[in-house]
Amino acid sequence: MGRRCQESDKPERCGTGILIDRKFSYSFEMVDPGESEDVSRVKEPTISGIPEEIAASLCTCGGIEGLEKMLPSDAHLDRMSARHRACADPIRLKILAMLGIQPLCVCVIKAVLGIADSKLSYHLGVLKKAGLITGEPQGNWIIYSMTDEGAGCLDR
Image (cartoon, rainbow, N blue to C red; front, side):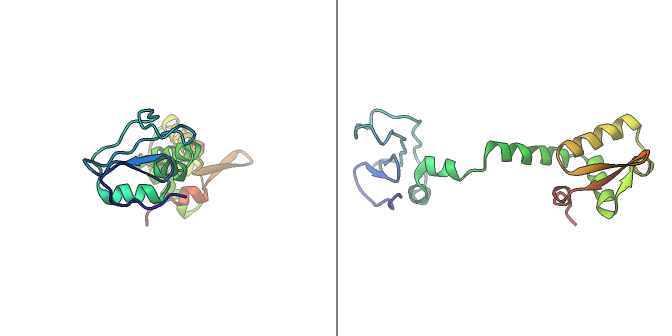
């Protein structure tokens, strides 16, 4: 648990491993809590010249380390990135819009878009890999439908 930063004309520790020098600028240095109070043994780069409200806010959330712990995992960010890339193409957005109305087979999607089979296959693969659509085999056909995650890509 960090404590709130207070005005001082000498450096002080705030939160976990944060040193704030209010005399000249706001400096944050990450040091190992097990090390001595010698601030010359810095673990991460110093952040200088940040606004006071940001410095105080960092202190209350546990400093840089606390802020890092609040971030989504890399795996979650990778999934979000893939979803955004999949939704960044107008053809794929049109496919999602069609599947938002009803599940469809490839031949109907192709007739509406008027694109080559290979191009449609590519776009369906991108959407499927991102988890935005699913393909359910029904006899000789594959019926595509939108997933709940795919529905989140459409702004109506």
